[in-house]
Image (cartoon, rainbow over all chains, first blue to last red; front, side, top):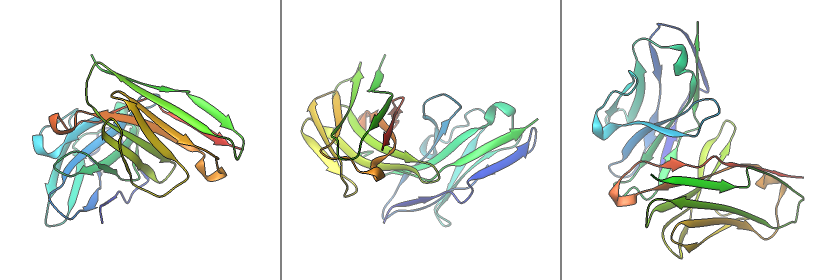
Length: 109
Length: 113
């Protein structure tokens, strides 16, 4: 069965510290993996996807098929990174998406 | 540019009353449409998705139903609300095979009393 697990509900770090938001998945096939972010009083929006291998706002995520993980990383956290982060997966047809329970990132000054 | 609208923004309904939440998309055609419920600590749960007019797939058995009467209109309904239907409902669209990004609406906060 398809499943996305984000083990941390809350992650607090100081400004300038590295941050890693964990995401593990299970999927019978080749999934597409995404990270979505929701800033305070804003809509949920796409942050990045694994297939593009891009860095958005300093964040990167590497798909590890052996560990079935897609952790989100940033070397130096900023206060404006404070938000709710959701890991999500989809099949290749992008018809259905499955989201994790989310991790709230709090970057302290 | 494309936009997605949801209404109402908030709704308080008594148990046993009917429900109709509406979602419309502008600026695109033949989008994939989705209804999610967002619960604290449980993330987003996919309720329904649609790849075309009249085509609805249900992900979880529940007291709710969805319809797509027009290409860019998606409606979430219930004949009789339960207390457990309370939550935050999000509508989203995506280009489907033309693209992977989901674009979310502002959401509807439903409270069933």
